[in-house]
Image (cartoon, rainbow, N blue to C red; front, side, top):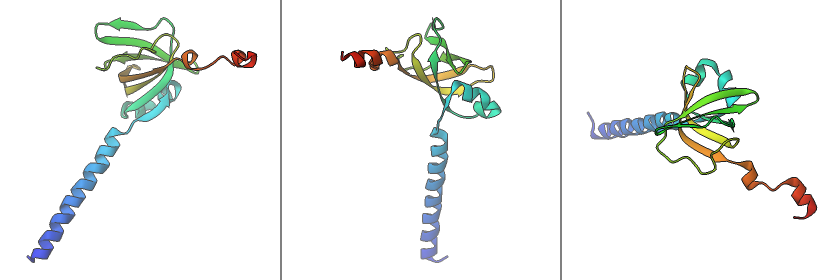
Length: 136
């Protein structure tokens, strides 16, 4: 075989391998951002995808069980139990009523298994509209 053909074949093989790894790695790292009610409406598709689920923490639902944290999130009347199994500490702003975005996977038993939590409590960051009108 000609030396140039061997070099071209080698370059094509390495290039094809790199493209394949990049595409498959990109797809594996992709997360779908959904609200609680949207995840529940996805059907079987929800069990096969990595998701970021957004909802509000239901008051009184937060329970710590050893290193595991359990709580319920809600949106538009839909509720979803969450088990947080992540290694990162829970944010200080995570509490009853806060908005939360949880990364993880939806299980067939209807529980969302989270590996990361982001939380925001609107009252901490937003000024009351009436205070603005009064000039405070």
